[in-house]
Length: 156
Image (cartoon, rainbow, N blue to C red):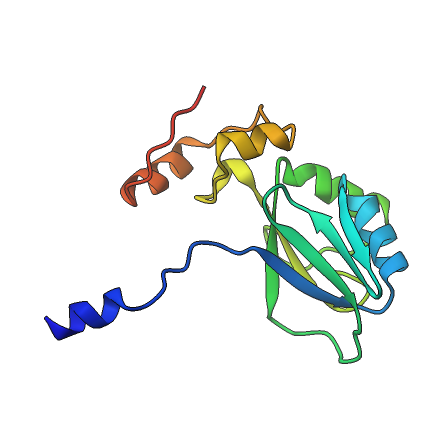
């Protein structure tokens, strides 16, 4: 019984509020990411910029000094990953080997692109509406994955 009590005394992880990316230049980073994604700037402060992701954000921080990470990465959820693949190609940005869509930004940050429809990640209807993403839907496999975790979502 003591083990159960101990588990209940810990905070539960609920989500990620933001990811901080170190870049060499805020202006260059906004330009780089702006050619790939429809960005909404939440704000700026000194050597930082904040890109809005609805109820989350990316913090760009001008301070990158170390080399690229080999395997460490972060995943961005998009409405259509093939649009990103096309924009990467148009911009001359090489994707990393594999079946997915992954690339490195000019500062060595490894970015993985995942499509909203195909993963268990979900946003509340009000957040999606606020983001103008009312046409997003989940694949049957993603709905099943959510259902197995006791998270029921209604499509349509």
